[in-house]
Picture: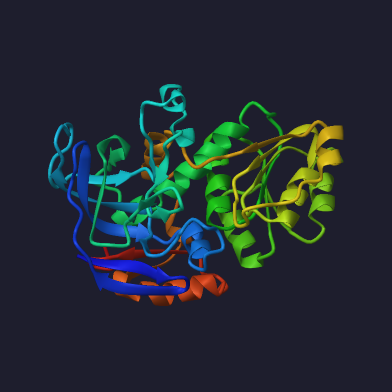
Length: 346
């Protein structure tokens, strides 16, 4: 099969490699669409330590069932499906508590670390455990379904933020995850959702997607205080992962408020510890998704969450290296690129 391999950092090669087979409990899929995730772009240069070459990246995918491994039931050849990016064991203490994203034996599709290597979906075929596979409605385009993993991440961050207050929420960062988090907050009943970014074009897009107010990153805290009667928001969801954006999220919440950390561009950030402690701000990390796929499919299929304004391009797999270079360079107005080994107009 053809696959886009990260042969070495900053070098992708379209190459032929053996197609995987469906082992016991697995499903073999023909990949129709796979999105380029920000984590793939940041792994492209080795900065995250989670894309050690050689590796076939790609975990935001959708396609059709080709073959079923031994013991798999409930699916049939030709089914339209997507899959979770997290491969969990199902037997550890965390899995038994329903916290599969915290599985002691967790692996991630399209990721390689010193502990594991699992080839992903920038390829014609991928084999994944049946327990992480979900059926798709016939009406849902594959290119839109390739966004479900990102939607599930947004929904997980929102789920962790519930119960921390019913007032205003601030989303820091209007990139892909930030804009999906904005929509997830609105879909889950949060009445006032603010969003901040350095890019005015992304803020304009956020306004069309339901933001109650948009703020430029410069002077953010003053703008938030002015919009929240001087108190700050109940909750801030940080969707970037840099020192300055984490600090801005903490500075923007009221005393006793909460900050959910979703972004992870950098492996480490510095926290204003005394401010967190003295103002009793609750910090929590959102570790990938954890069973949000059914809800994500429901919201995307109903139109409550829209992804078509976020997809910048749909391109054939062989153009992957060029699109990675453009995303890595931070080209303005370029957001989500979906690659397909088949017809680029699926």
